[in-house]
Each structure stands twice: as structure tokens, then as C-alpha cells.
Image 1: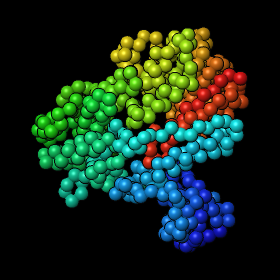
Image 2 (image 1 turned 120 degrees about the horizontal axis):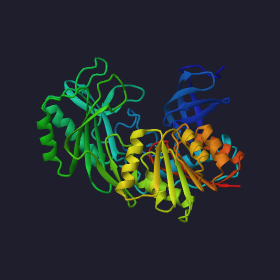
Image 3 (image 1 turned 60 degrees about the vertical axis):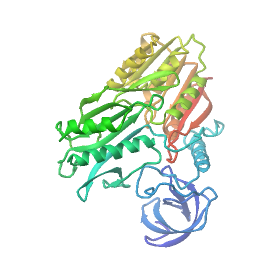
Image 4 (image 1 turned 135 degrees about the horizontal axis):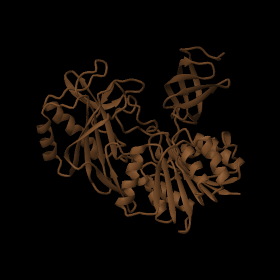
Amino acid sequence: MAPIQKNDYIDVVFEDLTHEGSGVAKIDGYPIFVPYGLPGEKAKIKVTKLNKGYGFGRLMELYEESPDRAEPPCPIYKQCGGCQLQHLSYEGQLKAKEKMVRELMTRIGKLEEVNVLPVLGMNEPWNYRNKAQVPVGEMEGGLVAGFYAKRSHEIIDMDECLIQFTENDEMVRLVKGICEKHGVKAYNEKQHKGTLRHIMVRTGQMTGELMIVLVTRTPDMPNRRKIIEEIVEAVPNITSIIQNVNTKRTNVILGDQTITLWGADVISDYIGDIKFEISPRSFYQVNPIQTKVLYDKTLEYADLSGHETVIDAYCGIGTISLFLAKKAKKVYGVEIVPEAIEDARKNAALNEITNVEFEVGEAETVIPNWYKQGITADTLVVDPPRKGCDENLLKTIAAMKPKKVVYVSCNPATLARDLRYLEDNGYKTVEVQPVDMFPQTMHVECVSQLILK
């Protein structure tokens, strides 16, 4: 039983943050999660919901503020679900992320001794996202484009998002205005009617190339030619205008049909000295500055001399593989998404990198097959999805015994679990380096170096 009732008003002290960025207070050991509360703060809260093991509350009054509390600069911060930490100073965010990683290593991984380094943050933790994808709706007859309100499908109209490239915000505003002027109706998901579903903008940070993608419900779009002409006239550095057709009732953004309306099919960008071609569908890191930091750390941990065979599991479009290939004898990459492997092969050719091979399939199936064929790695790099590595892959790593494993992770909880498995099967975790890829949110990436005991 909870020691409190719904709608109670209670004075609390926040002890911690959840993985969603809410403050955690405890009443007789019973945790209550309260948005916008920060560790160390004293506050009055209202209890809004009770579950068996935890409850939720609303912040009513702050008696004592954290020295790390900041004024969120975004006017729609509380309505929009995109960021969770604008009310915490950037220094405070980095400290909170380091603490979270450290605690997960201890609690889930039982890795009390592991060296968790301070988070590598950004000098300028705003306007870092190179890709905007914004749902379009209608309000009082006009088009709105913005983000969904927390836990809803109501679109909050937005002129600028402080974590996106300012140029991308400008493009969304411009395209929305041009489409509205030419009578384009927004998609209505309840009725499955209307035309324009999303506006997507992708920018090459190093090249300045710009792609606009109009996601529509139907292949035909009113006044398409005039819309294209006006965009091209208004945006001198436009590289590509694309229409993507998504006819399905779904919350997946892109559909199966892609038509180039003007300019190139792709834009290009660089991470370090490696060039990548980016299509509307390409998976490409949204924070190129920190991606370079992450990959430099990966290379440092791989510590290649030019004689090694490297396997890159979950290789995506080959971003890490191509970095490794410049320093290794041979790199093998595997990825389950066929389009990503197609992109990886194109990117290798684009950079004239010939000592890399890519294969489509599940890492946990392909790598054991390679192992049977006699392909073994001196160094193995994994960069799995949020759910972490498949157990069969971990078993194969333990059997193959590469001298080094470099684990790149977007989820420190599954990282801690997988490090525990590798520790129990012949490896020693040297250190864990968190990297802040998504300032103002609770997400944190980590790179870990393991060596064979």
C-alpha cells in the first residue's frame, strides 16, 4: 500500500532524477516521480497518480532551489515532449548523466571498480540537430507545423526549436507558408484525408547542402510546380527537393515511394575527412560534432596499427567501419537493414576505401557464420540498438576471443548488462567514456573499451 493518497499535498526533498528527467522523492521509502524537480530541492507537490510500487506528482511550490536550476529558454518547453532537461544547467546535465552511467554500472553490471570518465559535452549545447521532421496539422483553417504535445497527438505550432539547426527551422516555416499559400491541406490522421503529413529538412553541416522532403498521403499535390519554383527562388543553397508518398494509416513518417522533384537525390556531408551521401531514408547521426567525438574515442580504444582484422557489428551505413578501415588491414561490417548496407557500400566507394566488406543480416547470425568460415577479429566493435547485444552475439564474442572489444552504446542500462556478461566470459572493462550527443535530453551515449584477460 502507498503511504499517501491521491490528491494529497506533501512537502518533499528530491533525491535523484529518473531516466526521463523527473525528480525522485521518497515518502517512507515509496518513490514519487515529479517532472521539473531537481536533486536537493525542497518542494510542495500534489500526488496525481499512485501505482503499486511508485507514484507521480506535480510540482506546486519550490521552497529551496538547486544551484543548478536554469530558466528554460524555450517558450513551449513544458508543452513539448522533445527535451527533458532545459530546467537544469548544462554543467548540471553533464554531472547527472555521469552519475546515471556510474550507478547503472554498479547496480546492473555489478562493476564497482570500472572507471567511468566525466561526460564529453559540447561547447555550444544548442542548435545541434541537423535533421528536422515536423508533423503538419490544421488549426482554424491554417497550417501548423511543430511537435506533438506530451503523450498526445495534438500538434503544438512551433517557429523555432532550440536544439535544431536554425536554418532547418527557417526552412520548415518557409515551406509551411508556401504550401498554405497554394492551398495544400494538412493530413488528418483520424479521417485519413488531406495531403501534407510531414516536412523534413536535412542539412549537411560541413557542406551546407540542404534537402527538403515533403511527406504526402497521395502522389498528387496541388500546385506542385509553383511550390517547387517558390522554394528554389527563396533558398539559394537548396540542393534537393523530394516528395515521399506515405499512403498508410500509420505513425511511421516515411512511406515506400520517393520522388525527386528538383535537384539531387541525396545531399553529402563529412564526419572528419570521410564523406557520406544522405538520402531521405539514410540513418545519419543527428549531431555531427559529437559524432566525431564519439568516433575518435572509438578509434582511440580500438588502437589499430594497420595489421588488424576488425568486425563492426550493427554497422549501419558504415560510419564507424569507414573510420576503422583507414587504420586497419581489413574491416567486415554487418547490419540487418538492406538499405543501410547499400548506403555503406556506396559510402565506401565514394571514399575509395577498398579494405571493407559489408553483409546484410543479423549480427548474431552472420558473425558466427564468419567464425565458422575462419574469419576472426583481432578487434570487434559493437554499436547495437537500445536493446543491446543479442545473447548469441555475446556468446560468439566469448568464443572468438578478439583481443579488444569496443562497445558503443546508446543505452547505458543494456551496456551495463552486456559488460557484465563479457566480464564473466574472459574480458576486463578498462573504462567507460560517456559522450553527450543529445544536450537538453536525458539520453547519453557511451564508448567502452574491453580487453581479453
